[in-house]
Length: 462
Image 1 (tube, rainbow, N blue to C red):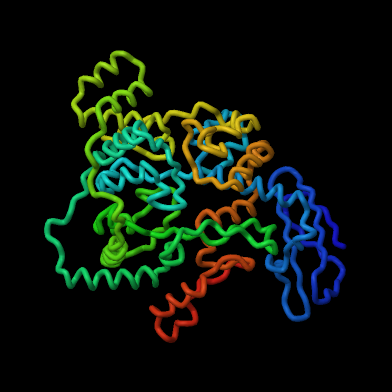
Image 2 (tube, helix red, strand yellow):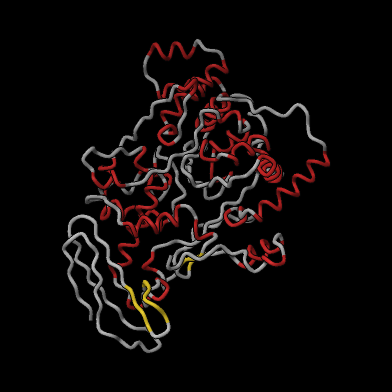
C-alpha cells in the first residue's frame, strides 16, 4: 500500500515498499481526492529489468465481470458528451450565459459555404441537401428536409441558392493530354496509399466507430473510423479538389482533414484519381424548378409579413428560388453550423426553439432530435443516431451536463484521439493501428529496405 498527501503546487514523488508481482491478474485500487485548482497523479514503477517509467496503460484494465457499475455509467455520459460536441448541439440549442459546463464544450464548425457553388455541382448539392446520408453514409450533417413534395421543393430552393454562391464551377477550357491524365491518375493512386489517405478513406462501406475493447474500457477511446470517398467526380472538379487538398482548413475549419503539405503536382494527381469515382444517381444539373404553388406555400410557412409576401410573389421564377433558398438556410438552422457570407455579409443564425437548459429535462428527450421515430421528431433534424447514441446523449444531458465544465486533460486527450481519428493509423493501449490489408498496401509502394517500417509509431506510453 502506498499513501501520500501533497498540498502545494510542486509535484512530489513518493515511493512505497517493494512488491513482488507474480504472473497473472492482480487487483489494483486507487483512491484520489482532488484539491482545488489543477491536479495530476501519475503512477510509476520499476523492476530488475527496466528503469523507472510510467505504468503503461496496456497493463491496466477491467475484468469484465468485475467492472464497477459507475464505470459504464460514466462511459455512457462521456460518449454522450462527445456526440453533443461532434453534432454541434450548442450551435442551435443556445446555453445560458452562466452555464459553466456549456462553456467547456467543444464545437465542430461545418464547412464554409460562402463559395460552395464554385466547387460543387448543382445536382450534387441537391442530392446532399435532400439526404446527406444517402450520398455519404455516416455523414455528420442531419437530414433536414422531408421527403414529401413540400420538402423536395424546399431542398431544391436551398440547392439553387447554394449553387449561386461562387458558381458555377469553372471547367478548364484546354483539357490536358489524355496520356498525361492517365499518368497523373496512376500517380494519384500511389499517393492515395503512400501518403496515408487509405487509412481513413479506404474503399468499401463506411465503418462506424469501433468501441474500445472491454480490456481497455477505462481508456474510453473508440477505434478507427472509415470515410470512403465515393462519387467525388460527381461533386467537384479535379482543379477545385486539388485546391482544397492544399489548404483544407480554409474551407473546413474543423480540422478533421489534415493539411498533408502536398505540392501542386501531387495535389493535382491525387485529385484526378479521386475524381475518377462518380455516382450515376447524381445528375450534374438541377431538374426543373418545383411548382410555383409549392414555393409560395414554403414561403408562407416561414414568413407571415404581408409586405414580404407581396414582394416574393412579384419576383420571377428563379429569383423566387434564390430568395426562398436563402431564407430557408436561416430558418432550418444551416447557418448555425455553416458560415454563409454572400458578398462578405454573413447570414444571421436562428437558434432552435428549445434552449440547452431545456434539453437537460427528461420530458424533452422523447421528441425532437432525440426522438426514437420520425413521428415524434416533428420538424427537428434527423441525425443518424443509433439507439445507443440516443441513450448516451440522454445520459449526458441528464447526469453529465452540470457542474463547472472544466474537462480533465486525460479526457481531452482521449477525445482528441477519437475526434481526429488518430487510431486509424496509430495504435494505443492495444486499440487501433493499421489493419493488415492496409499495411500490405503500403508495403507495395515502399522501397524494399523500408517495407517493414510502414506502420506509424505507437502512442502507448508516450
